[in-house]
Image 1 (cartoon, rainbow, N blue to C red):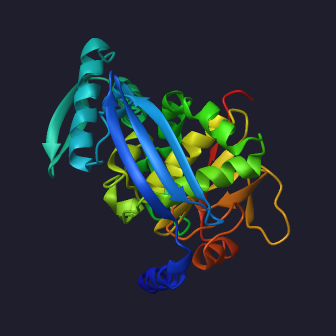
Image 2: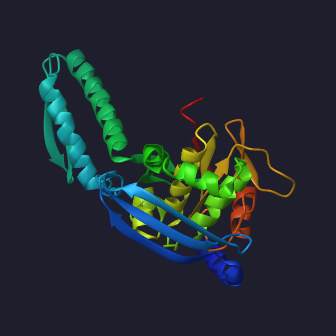
Length: 318
């Protein structure tokens, strides 16, 4: 793993001459919003610029609850919710007791009838699973398994992107006016060059960092930096706002991430087939400039060797 990361860093240094470049960035408060101004050089070294406004609630209220996953805190929070549910919905013929064991809170069920106790344990298990699912969804967490079967908890990037789209719909008329034609490739390459030009911050381990360093789309723009998971999520958000009906996927390899768009690949372009859908791949991270269908050599190698996982980000309008 360490060798792969070193090779990727060497490659990025080699391609420094073709890196994305953000020429100018500024933001100004204006009533209940902030106006963002960008200038950058695209894949063809052509100057591009874009200005748009995001509301202050979108910047400072959306995902305010988003935090790093801390297993002890999460476990305690979930157990407190389970305790409240059991208080509101008492077990039949049995009673639940919450005890601390080896630093964790556990539930013991007692009763006079073994059958009732067994049924009560089953009910407690159902309530625990329901509560965990609700907690994860509410806090944008999800269980994640890597291509080599390492399991952890990461940010739910698909739902973050989905819930960010409404804030980014303001970009649709602006970008389509600039690109001048509703062509999926041209629109996507414009968005890719924009996101690639935003300064990059290093990705923490997806499995062990539990979301540390991740910036949701609006926060990424506010801070004008993001790691590859953050940039992938921003790219997917903008593309979904621009093209509501197109299916996409989020693809993860070790220490990197990129997007897939359900359009046909041309000869020599990188694509994958996932759940019966062919996705053309794109690199949102930068600073190396890649058009849709082109990946860094290390990313290509990971895809060709099957060292990736994918998550569908399909249209709600299907």
